[in-house]
Image (cartoon, rainbow, N blue to C red; front, side, top):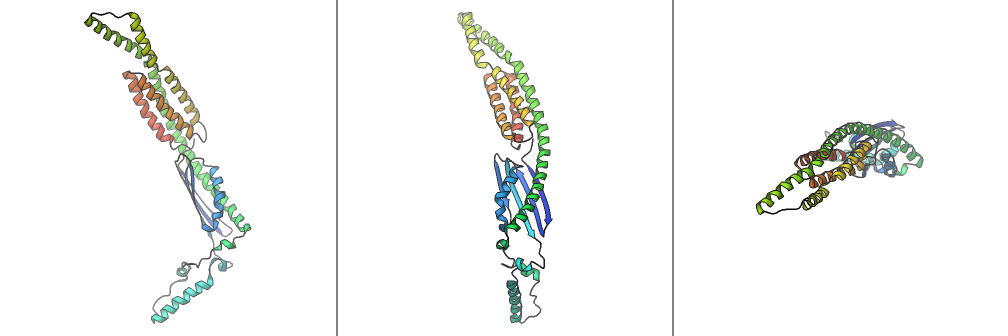
Length: 299
């Protein structure tokens, strides 16, 4: 079992490139991916999603990827607009001269490098060969980050599985109590009905045939029979145990079975008008709500 919540990150440095990736995942009924990467490498976006889907099938995923090219003397002309940089520096000197104040600083070179359009847009200079080389590094980096995220999800999923099993055992105990109390529902109704009718008949000096009484009890027995709901509830529990033993992709199934737990519990409570069973159903619904909250974060 895997949790939908997790975090992974990786840093790769090779061939004059520095790559830093961060991947965050939170729960969502469906798969939703948000990708943030440099504009000039936006061509990688369609290739990224299939890699992410190898690790994640459900949840909201935010992926941030920084790709920085290390500057060198051999590629300064391609990284920076040197003529424009010179114009910025000359303009700063001209302003200082016009103000006739030599104490004014024209700034450091690093300040000029941050000015608009000094850093070149190298997208046009990226050949197919260069893009393929960068993509290879990106793919390797993402695999590392996603592996970290998956490890975290698996560890959290293991703790969730333990908790879910504990709650299922409580449901098992409660449904067994309901099963024990079930025969007493009809017996309790028969006793109450007989006493009530007998009292009315004595007060009114009337009689009622045993057949009518048996027919009324039979009708109630049919309406109050919860044996089918008990069997279905126990069947859902077995399926739930089986599902949480699966490695991945059991979240939707667990969510469906949790809804079935609640439906059967409500039906049992409405059909069996018996205080002991009602108390069991109240406890069952409390446990089911705890299970429902956990299941929302199962991948």
